[in-house]
Image (cartoon, rainbow over the protein chains, first blue to last red):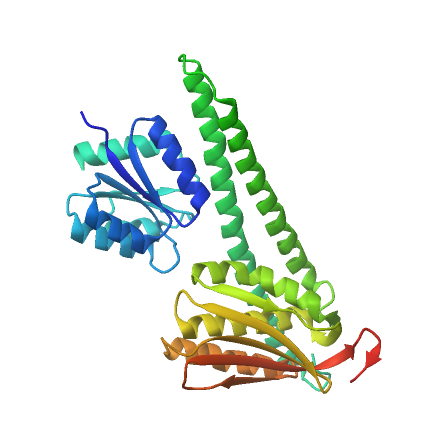
Amino acid sequence: MDPLRVLVVDDEPEFVSAIVERLEIRGFTTTGLTDGNEAVEKARQAHYDVAIIDLKMPGISGLDVIRQLQQQQPGLKCILLTGHGAAENEIKGRECGAYACLMKPIDINILAETMQDAVENG
Amino acid sequence: MSPTKTSSDHQLILERALKFLGRQVARQTHEITNVINIINELAGLIGDMTAASRQAKPLDPERIEGIVERLQRQIKREELILRGVNRLAHSVDVLSGIFGIEELNERVVFLAERPIRLGQASLEVEPPERSASLEGFVLGHQQAVLGAIELALASGGAGHDLRLRYGLHAGEVEISVEGPACATCNAEVDALQQALSALATELGGRLTTSPETGSTLRVALVFGLARANDSEEVK
């Protein structure tokens, strides 16, 4: 089975780097970006199985990124990351089509399980 | 705060300042959380590498050293944020008094970092040419200068360069923020401008914005100086 192709988008470069490295160790093929608009553009050129998107980013919100990604790749599974525990973020995320909403700090193993689950059962 | 203001005026100013303080603390907790999240992932990465080394994948000392440096950078970043938050908290130790413009600038530049980053903008600062002091509500003046930066950010739209300048002349300081003129003028921008104008007046100063059309917006706050050149009384 080919490794899952994962797109990680968060405006904190060091956070993106660390997540990418940790997912690579777990066998995912991962691309990290720090700009939501760039992520939308990137997804026009390459296919991803899962996108991990931060809620609050400069220029474009994570919710808008999810909307645009899902228009481009309807089968793409999106996981929203949020720094706050508000339930409304999860509701908004699901309304936009996110498969799950995870609160930071994330547990990398739960993130990996959620990605697998999204692709296999979502 | 002006001594001619009534107690209800003071109450209103204090209420606004308290809300401002709350907003700033909330913003900074987001920044602190961001750093903690990064530290969490970098620590996890070391854990991942250690676990892999138990499965016959040797640890790469240079990679570990690199991660340690990345951790140290985040700890330094956290220190700076905490120092700024501490300074913000101490802004209300003495509500009203004499304070230096350089100190005001340092505090505002710290508070502006997050909105500038989220607005994908940059802030170039031209500090005052010489020492000078203002007299009044320390927190309120921070609120006003940050408000001018946020007004310029909201007016110009994302991804532009702003310039913060301090001009001293005729017993006054003019604190100006320049950026692109209204690209996204709307009710929000109007409301920001009205609130900033009211705040400037409450602080004993005034707000000017120019031009209303054209390519550059200039938001300027003018306040009377308490003292210039450290000892020269001008007010």
